[in-house]
Image 1: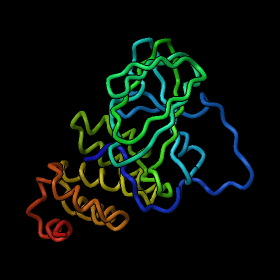
Image 2: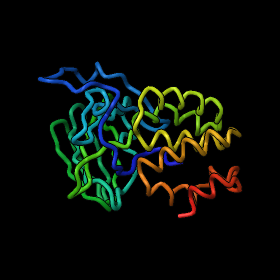
Image 3: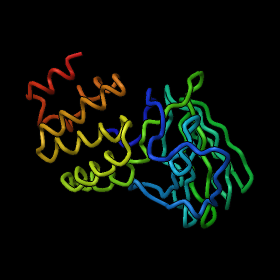
Image 4: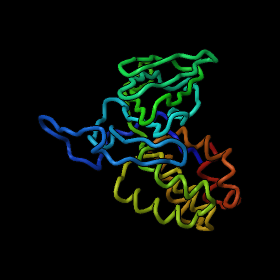
Length: 230
């Protein structure tokens, strides 16, 4: 299973209609969710933005990790803006103090994380792959299911994930992760069907699935073998 995002060739965010003119929301009006790591608010998904990725992440207590450590190797360049509070970034081992109003730009391949130096520190994050038009994978949709997956509650994760996939069609990430949970929950036919839909939207998922241990339970299924044959 891949809880976070990869770049995809998806076309639009189908959950929200296109808006002519504008929409307005304060940060705190967007519902906070968590994927089992840090609390965040799905700004892109809230507004139905399709041309760039953007979200906010919050550390409610001083010392909380706000941004999970990652390097975006081969993926996004990211711009961080400390909207509220004070953050401490660690980028390739170097500490960067970032009070409210600070921008921090990090290129792909640089390992980065951030911690709250003050309560309720909130960071706005925008990102995209250099030289490519942004396309949404839908990782925000699946994030709320991830704690069930991490807890090994695969049947619950599959049931909840299916509801979200049906309400938000057209995203490869939730479909792929749903297939993982269905495989682990002993639902081989459903797992193969949803994996096929995910691969149709984003063919590189074939390689992910071929090496993903979540599919060990269905690896000998002829339909699965056909999907990942490559």
